[in-house]
Amino acid sequence: MNILVSGGAGYIGSHTCVALMGAGHSVIIADNLSNSKADTIGKIMGIADKEVTFYEIDVTDTEAVDIIFKNHKIDGVIHFAGLKAVGESVEKPQDYYYNNLVSTLVLAKACQKYGVNRFVFSSSATVYGDNKVPFVESMDLLPTTNPYGETKAMSERILTDIAKANPYFSVSILRYFNPVGAHESGLIGESPNGIPNNLMPYVTQVAKGKLEKLKVFGNDYPTVDGTGVRDYIHVVDLAESHVAALDNLKAGVHIYNLGTGKGTSVLELVKAFEEANDIEIPYEIVERRPGDIASCYADASKAKRELGWTAKRDMIAMCRDAWRFENGQGE
Image (cartoon, rainbow, N blue to C red; front, side):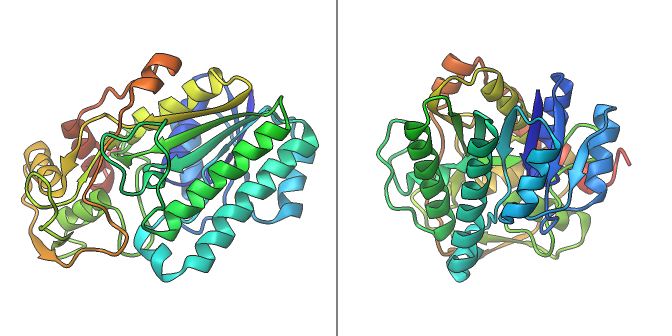
């Protein structure tokens, strides 16, 4: 199939493009490079040993998106493009609502116009708000603790309503937990612009000496060691789930948690990184970050049951691969 991947030069998008091509699909990437780099496109092609078509556009631009659909016979869309920092969303809510909702609407409308009936949406565990863990897909969604989570929950509702009105429109909503790690080649990984918002690239930049020490946001949560607990999943496992979702897509809306089903605290991750790479990570405890919750991990049994997918790579592999990418091995 010919798959349009919005945000395909980004962290999860780039790994998914590699997985898609490895499964025999052709890839068209649309990315404005606001939080990614142009040379990632060449690295994707180098790993997959296949060509991709790249459009440097913003998918909130209706006319630019229309050109892609006119130029290509698209069989499905995987929508990653969006702003994604929880803390920043609290500071800049209007940017998050505009970018994340309009991009979903523009792509969905183009799909309707051109008869594209396969749509995979990059959602997030933040839609569960402060529900009781483990999070299960059937839970009622609570008000989220930040605008980023709200944009994901609203996009889910938009796509669900569109699918109800169009019986041939098939939507797979993938609720990510916390992707970390990098491709084993060391060529692509998480490379945010500026100071990282996510834990693992912050840890790797401290290990590299780019940053002095890790800031741990709070140590007074009701968790195993007082630090926030998350369900970390290797990005390659996550990428492979998108291929499974696409290949198993049926009419209607299908929602899946993508995680390992195991919670890991910030300090447990730091310890695993030190063990995997024999590097000490200095850190300091600072105030809690706005919008964060104490604990978040998945019940991922539905994805295993319906998609035949399960996370295979452990925390040591996540830490080792993340460091290989940061340290420049494989270049």
